[in-house]
Structure formats: C-alpha cells, structure tokens
Amino acid sequence: MKKYLSENDFFESSDLSLVSTLYYFGVSIEAVDKTDPSRAKFVFTRNKELDALIEGFWSKSLQIEPQGYFNSLREIKTRLYQG
Image (tube, rainbow, N blue to C red; front, side, top):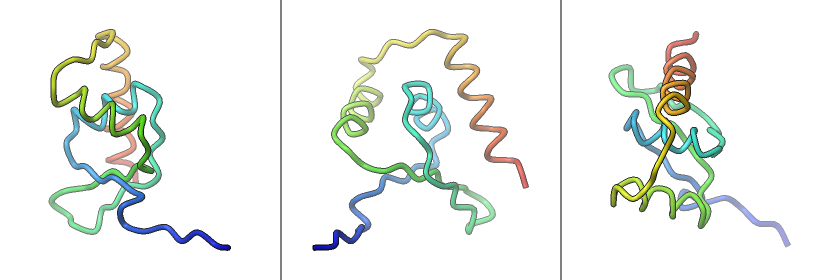
C-alpha cells in the first residue's frame, strides 16, 4: 500500500525567527518556496517533534545558545538569498 503525502504532512512558515529556531534544533528544511516574490516560505516535514518545537517557540519555553542561534539565522538568510 502506497502512502501519499498530503498538505498536512508539511509545515510552512515565512517567520524568520521561527525558521531559524527550528533549524537551530536540527530540523531539516525540505524546500524554500519563492513563488511569491515578496515573501518566501520555508517548508518542513511535519512530525510530533516539529510540532513540539513550534509550540515551545510560541510559548517562549525554549532555551537556545545565542551564538548558535545567530549562526542558524545567518545560514537561513544565505539559503533565502541564494539564486
């Protein structure tokens, strides 16, 4: 039996701080959707760990190391602006 991916299997965000935080915690970016020239969306495969990180981000309960976060932010921006 084949499993087909649905829209609910992915999480998209254009929030740079959220995306940088997820990347800092080791979540892989599946794609960067640049169809809208004014706002790019980062696409992640959805799972329980991702949902827990997102919830932790919005509830302000995550703790991160500042230099590591800054490096993640820099990598995300590089990925965003590369051709």
